[in-house]
Image 1 (cartoon, one colour):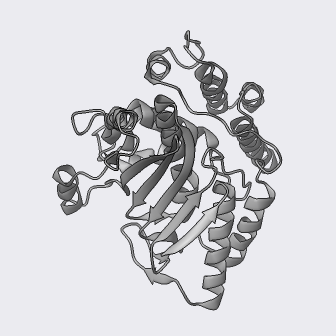
Image 2: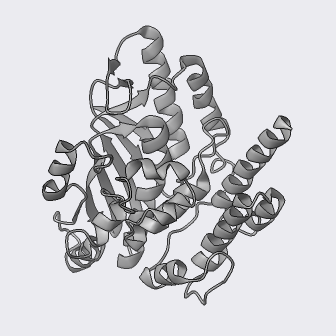
Length: 337
């Protein structure tokens, strides 16, 4: 197994891009093979990425150009237990590719698996188990369900969970987490969406239990990149870019996660986009709501207003990422005129 010990997601992304480049140039240590959606280059063995500071979850690389609005909002949707297509479609129009036509839902939605699919709330179970017995090794969240997913595979369904299980453990009041993934794309999945989604889940459970956040280990059984987007030299540049633009190294603060379900319910039941509810904590009032409002301005083609709303986001990392992303969009549009 290959182990990448990283400070945060920017460090991890830089390391894996450099490793990919070196193996590609040497023409050894990678496997070229087919997949359900195109040819990939895969590492020949599982890759474990160990994040020392998982709360430093925002990838700042301008070259990677990850959409921070989508990653953040999808994480909240997951914590809320959603599987509806409508909400994530607001932030990513390609999301429908993961849904059966006219179903209106995502078959393998992680949040729904966490909170609803199996008939009970697995997040609450894990929190209860770890508070009752901090030494427990039974604090597990399952996302793969053979009863639902085997038939989906047999019928060539568009979505079954790539991440299959999550293990939690506590040592000296610190919550560690291990995520197991059967198939992991480097660019869009592991070091983009997954680093955000699962670190927010880890912090959310840690706060429920009054634990500190420990390490987050992400085990990718098949870590790969699609050959139609991979150009060795440009991805080596992306490796350097990720380290140079790691704003956590420059003193940017890592954001927190929601505290409990009450604010999640208010956020998803409030009248979007502009009405502010009476939230119990500042997370939604000062981070989630300004991000949502900024996105709506962007969707309405008023980027100046979007940037103004983004400037009020209280979390340093999300504020910087959102403003930077919006300015890159603005520059691209202006260049096209």
